[in-house]
Length: 321
Length: 258
Image 1 (cartoon, chains in turn red, green):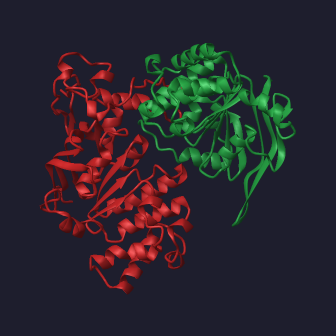
Image 2 (cartoon, helix red, strand yellow):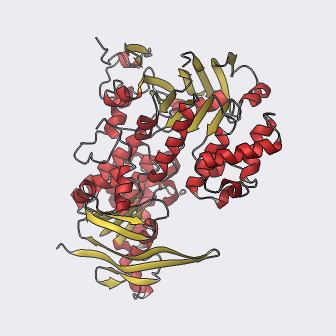
Image 3 (spheres, chains in turn yellow, red):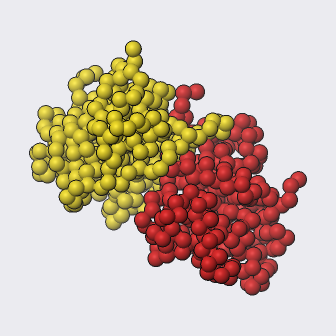
């Protein structure tokens, strides 16, 4: 396996309007065959981070700093024309809602073959063959027939599969999955994750944006925790959940309910995430943090190495001996 | 056996659609006793929310009946049903959608009191402030509008509004599903606290098994319009009997190491 990073994001900064910094100096790497979880609550900047990398930000947003290296090119610098050649071919995306991500007026055939034909990967007949195969691969029964249907004619679970097929059909190097199982039932969730696992095993790097720690644990190898637009902790997935170090990660774990945990006391984080236009100075988590000590927590927190493959942006965390 | 508050007796609901008849709820019998929380779990389309609406008397049953404190909701004249209404309230998944956007937080909580002609304006105000305080909304923010609050705070206001008429039964339909985990934990604590303090009876609907396990005394599992299993919470999670319940439980992905 190639150990070099497939995607390498450095100091990404994305601003909305004139002053709202939604992503503030985010860095991470993804390798081939690796699944990286980006974990955090709504407003933490997870989705804006990935949208920045893909060049699909809303018009009010601007990238104001950083690089995103992918195959020797900086995705943030190459411009939309070049990005279009990469999007849907080398980098694919899967979203939370297939209903919104797919075009309701086009058949699956049109949507699944579009990338192949547009990128000039094959002719129409071959594209159709590959699309049928992709639908079969994701477990859609009778793909020859189903390829002629429209998204609304499929159940939620099947639609989610069709969207994954759409992402897989060009055999991308990198897949970005934004809450891919949030809208599906638990019994379908594992099937979807196992489909994505197949892709990962074939060498595709996966970035999974999720707020579901169970999903992250099942699927991902490593994790980045975001809070108020910054990375607060980075660790191998199991270490992060079994031994969280940053007080925010500790709080997330203390807030998670799980089956069999009835006797486990909940330790919710008080308050709510900050309004980014009024970001607390220094560590943005300090107003909610049970371990906060002023004034030190009101100063900028550097990302510190706290163990093998582990970093955290808090001066109070335990560091491995 | 404790006192029974509301009982669904073999209720069935059939919706007529262009694609044909849909049997959303199929011969379901459930009882919520006083002071008890009944959890109702199932996947999307299993009929959970339809059961909630039938038990609230918001929709008529196709067959079977719902009896609330001795009154058959289907037989009751509209006027008498209106007298019963304040005794059953709902909390929904989307708090913003269940609040009046052009009413302040306190206005939202006072409105049900006004509609049911409880007290005068001053006493309604006092009561609304007490309720906002009860659910953890800083009363200094009482005059702010729903959109000025976060999702978790909006849900707290929606809960205060649902509690304003001191209902006997609170029906909660996925009340934490649109909230972030840290906020979900806060709202779960609030429900636990309210149940202990007010002795509320609840029908608590969720697709999230862990949430239901935490709050419910008994749990009913729905699949394709039918209740496939119903047991005390501990029994259901420790020794699930129905294959579908087992399938649901085995699909849960653990967060912590086992």
